[in-house]
Length: 155
Image 1 (spheres, rainbow, N blue to C red):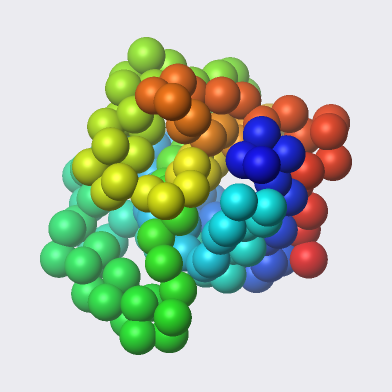
Image 2: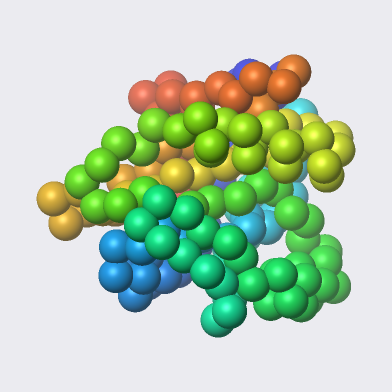
């Protein structure tokens, strides 16, 4: 079931994340992840940015809640759902989830009471390449999704 779900992400989402992170000038940035999921797969069709009024520093981001609400309303009208969140870490640093990241992921999954485990993506630039690490919350525990298992596919 969820331990083996295939995660498919449209290439345009990676491109959008690249643009957003490049323009953040090494400050943390992020947004929500939108698409559809079931017990066997996750399909990521879009990601948001943080919004113009977001507050960010090198190690934290607080989204512009009005922007996020409007963007989410638009995505729901397109029959997409919130699947989780993504955020960046500073360039050339670890993509491992920090204690704050882990706490936030667990709180987020509890608050929205997902039918299936939500997806969380941490991205960062390393030697000029955008790298990413995926996580999911199952039974109130954050689990790393190993990219080497071939579960994450960019289309």
